[in-house]
Amino acid sequence: MSKGQAAALLQKVRRWIEEEGLFPQTGRIVAALSGGADSLAMTAMLASLFPKERILCAHVNHGIRGEEAQADEAFVVQWCREQGLALEVLHADVPGEARRSGEGLEACGRRVRYAFLEKLASGENDRIATAHTRSDQAETVLLHLLQGAGLRGLSGIRPVRGKIVRPVLYLSRQETEAFCREKGLLFRTDSTNSSVEYTRNRLRLEVLPLLRELNPNVEETLVRTARGFRRDDDCLETLARQALEKARPQGDGEERSPFLKTAPLQSLPDSLALRAMELYFRERGCPRPETVHLETALGFLKAGGGRMHFPGGWELSVWTDRLCLAQIPESSGGWEVPVSLPETRLGDGRRLFLEVFPVSEMKNRINFHNLLFPILFDYDTISRSQAFWAVRTRRPGDRFVPAGRGVAKSLKKLLNEARVPPSQRERLAMLTAGEEILWLEGFGVCQRCRPGPQTRQVLLLWLEDGAGKEKD
Image 1 (tube, rainbow, N blue to C red):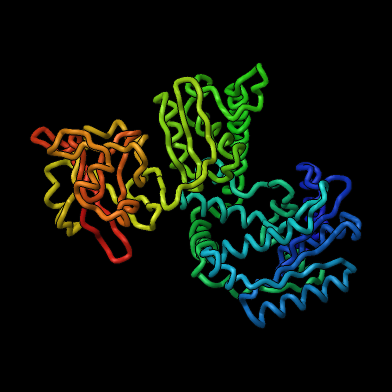
Image 2 (image 1 turned 30 degrees about the horizontal axis):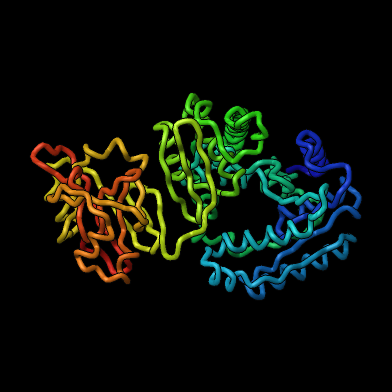
């Protein structure tokens, strides 16, 4: 960057802030300041564009990099003192917190960091400024693409998310570094940025340089693509909200009813129906519904009925003309999870696997998985019910028709006859389709689903715990 371009970059950021309406006329600006080039350039620019009294710098020492982190903190403290900027510092033990919570180190650090920033930005007009750049945007789009994201994920980092705003989102990392050099701003470099153990670093250090050989402007291309995805995603979100409003009961004081009418949702394309259901789930207090939960809800909606328990004590009930998601007290030790092919993590930590193949491959697949007691279904008898599949523990009133018997029996009677100890009964897993039990651990598949001479496709089921495969 030629000398004198720092002023042009500052004006670019000014226009971006105005176009996106990032900051209200009043309120605190909490600047997330790590000491790196991106955050230093952003904070310096904000200090040029707004009164310094509005700016509060925030630095987090995550307790990860030892002396290097201490040096980063000392640098930030000194720089803020020289610039006359207020500063708040958080000392955190992220490794210890990650061990306690079971999170990954990066995810835990992010949670701790944003909780701190949100606490500082408690006012209605307060905003949190983070130094995500155009380079971060390109890396995020690639990362989400590799993880199998939809439109929302491919939209990348949004300029505004609640109180969080990104003033330098359309500057490149090279531009923020050049701004610092021209302004004489020394900056810190995190040594972990050069480690390819982290997926994002590997994208930045290894993948993007290869892509630049094919397209020198790949970063700009990815950012432009993300903006297009964001426009489409915003449009679908608006349509989904409108559809959700049409599905609410009207009149007779039911505007705040927890129920939805199914007819307006059933007529929607699947993509809009899924989005409307996601909005409804979040509205009911289930903030991050998984894709498998939403697809299960869509299956119930299209079929006009069904009931499913989700982790966290949630139950979705769908009748012919209405549906409702409600939180219920979790039973002691009981659980239910929707089936996800090919692997489903059960409520007790075990894993259930399902694999479909032609009957001609049955012997080879059983030998390949080294299964002594294979559990086999005639897949064609149950494939249409897949949207209703769940794995759960027993409930009062459950009945099962074991293969070879042809008579339905209550689970209580069946387990009594088999003399299954009470201590083991609550652990038994069962595969269900709606209210029907397709398979009961220790008792095999149901009469209707057992393979026969006419079977063309086979469904193979097996369980694994930490020690390996379990027998039926």
